[in-house]
Length: 264
Image 1 (cartoon, rainbow, N blue to C red):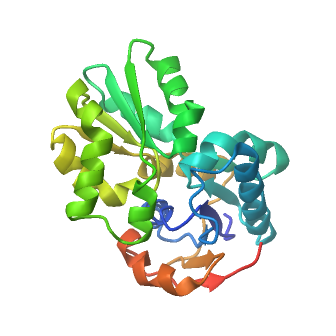
Image 2: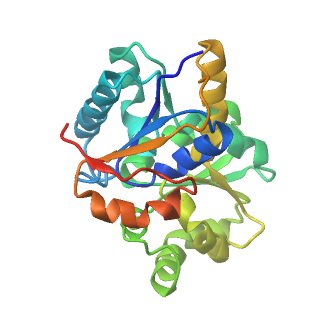
Image 3: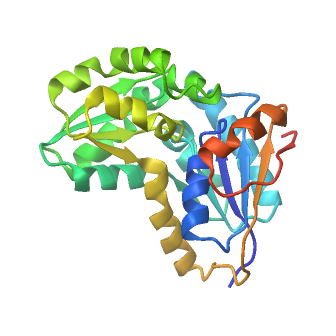
């Protein structure tokens, strides 16, 4: 057994969707969450800058003696996961592989769409991984750079999000895609808007929720489950925590402790 915390980080508050899924499946685990709110979004940053930011946060969580770290950011998973894994000895898990596997399982008509930040879509990591498993699949990748700011501001439903979604998703809707991978942990908060735009028959794959299975398997391998009951969720941010606290409940159903600002 291992009572050390699980570390999770994202560019902002979107990674709390992963924290919520973890807390529901592993209620005895204490989770340390870092939201890099001072530098959000990552999607318009260079690969070197994203690796720098991710390394700084991983180092901070490692110093807090986390037993495992989840990169709850698709952009950082796409551009920095290998870099992090080579520099740290603890298990580090990204969210992309899990989302790809679930998307392939759900897909029926060989048409899969991926929504993500500009950096994630440019990397083509989803397309490559999907093709490696299902070469016959047609993959449509769509950058949605305004989705993260909408979510960070709490604008997840209404006229403006619907108009933006209609613009981004027009080609996907026309292609008759039956499975859409939400390639950013912010995007599950826009599920209702995306579903209304594409139609309820289209499968929406939450890559953050899918990663929990990988976390459980990893904890089993290292005998890392906590022996305590009722784990806590501790949140840390790199900017003023007041806004984070105001909208954190939209992302995470389990009560989180008041966020604390940190310097990396």
